[in-house]
Length: 424
Image (cartoon, rainbow, N blue to C red; front, top):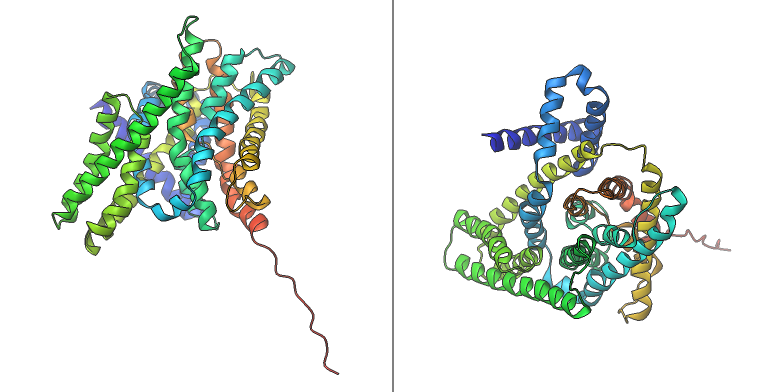
């Protein structure tokens, strides 16, 4: 009953905020819901105990007792990644395979060390002590672009198909690298005698990535074959649900990447399955089913992100370094894209406008918050949580609301009016 009460409360709040946003604010749905949740969190923090103490106590209890890391990384992320991958054209992704591969692996690692290095030398200037390993830990959890935030915002931005595929593909595939890197660094912070080497890290990354992609391909192919043998859109929807839910259980049990499993399965069903296994009616119903599920989960997720503000005990201590962290992350994002673009022979080469869009369109979101909340409580947990929250909110609100305008400014060349000579 407690679980039903909690989920019901979240759905009611998400639908209420979504209605208010659509009726009055007219912002992108996810951003509007998150902003209203942040506003509600601020009101609750300052006036809740005075105006409505019982409701405030229940909401604090609901947010604090929910395992956001498990809810997102173990459940919601799988559905959202599958829903996003189903709509990605594999031919477009194959054309951009080199930049997607580089940005989802090398760029994540490079960004982690750039953020960690800058943060380590900057924090003493603000009378903050943060060991180098914890600086790297923050770099690892904040470096991956969030597929949920990126996919939601890019639908509204008018960018070229090639650039959209680069950003979308990177965000879909970089979670596997980021989570493994985060787990390794977190282990180093918790024990002095961790037996970790370059070889063990490489093997862990290969196992997570290759194993996840292979399992996803098998599940996607098997599901497509099963759908092809029937002509029923309801059973087809159930089959795709079983791929997501059962696929995660298998991936979790054999210790491979669940996110990459979902991406591979979604790509295969969304391309091979739709092409050879589905009638137009089944394809239409399945597309609408996953679009609806995607919108509902996105609304709940960004409501979660807004209310996570209640978990930060004190803003006054670390707000300055948290603001500085926003600029550090943007600098690291630029360097992690720019440096590989100088070395790797991309065809065509990245233009200045494309580089700007890759930097500004690399949004952070719920994945980063889920990872930072998984850090054990300690002297540095509050600092890491506050920096992460500042970066995520800035990324979603400021970058998310302006990415379309930036695209128009840097990618669309203004048409110059040429005066015609007068006829004599």
